[in-house]
Length: 280
Image (cartoon, rainbow, N blue to C red; front, top):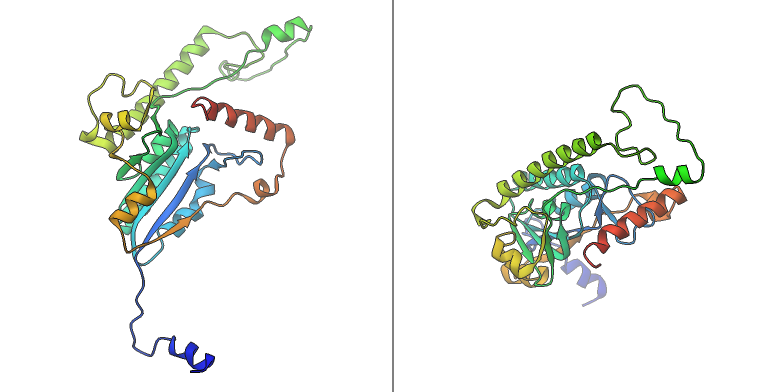
């Protein structure tokens, strides 16, 4: 048989049914959750803009059996955590397919918020899971300015416009306001986890303390449904399906490393600090 005949023989005949394989899509959610792209962030960032295209591709296949979320994130911005999680749920509900999350090194704080968008959560026995709480940090430079004879001049309209200004002395009423804001965000986090995990959660006073646990303890507390890695679990559950990765693309400027050098360095330091909280 000639090469031409061989190629022609592989073309489906009119009316002939073409068999397509089942698909399990994998979306990688790796990095700090932030609304801003960082050219110097070695592990990438997560926000709705960066993952939207990947999520659309992940839920697009005709013979889609499931979508797997491969999560490796120490958390970050609560709003972006909520936006991405809600987008995942809308796509999953519209397609009627299960979503399974897999924690890698860490799925903590906003990273665990993302994991709760899944119907099931798996973790490696060494994964760090949880950190259901709220944290923010800053620096105070008022004493430093005074030491060098620098006078701070700040002009506002509205008595609360300059709350927690790092170049002004800290005010107790500003700290109280921040604590109230944290409490509201914490309540929303707890509500989301409780809604998504339901009766699987164990009654523990430490559950919403902001603590983090390894995989086995997270399983005991009901934060995850099992121990295992993505490939083993998916291949066992869907042995005939192709595993297709839909990885988020970095914005063009981030790929080129273009941006404000000072801002990029500060972002990189901030991201490094968030990962270092978990020894990573």
